[in-house]
Image (cartoon, rainbow, N blue to C red; front, side, top):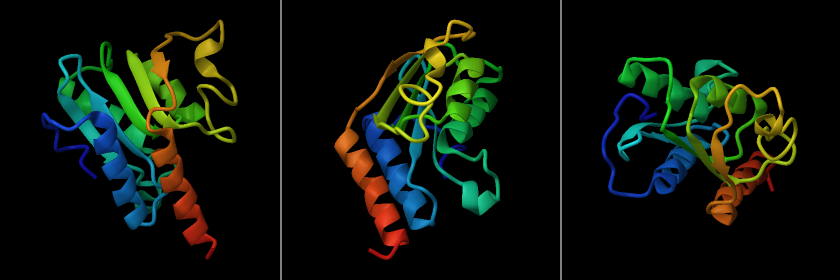
Length: 158
């Protein structure tokens, strides 16, 4: 996990997130990767899922990078920052992004069963949502979806 080794990476953030997702899969984690980019374009944190390794159901890639970024920035908010993730955030991660006040979310694959942005509770569309980040879905969707599909096919022995 690279959440505590922030740096300025010349590659695009979704490429970094994809690398984190592949590394998560290699560790036996669901292949989701995330990057938190500061307002100036600096990569503040990057990580892949660590649920199994930490016996922590909240150790989604998004949660890990948001937590690491606020530690690095020294405050509880991520205003002006962009969260880049390979899969549509679940309701837990979408709600956390609201509370962290993330400025923008960019995600790859859509998650009709477990998503919280365009699917499920559609948190940002709720009238009582405390903060509405901008969001863009479907960025490198085919590649991100293939990572997940291949991971679960291998898990099922297909």
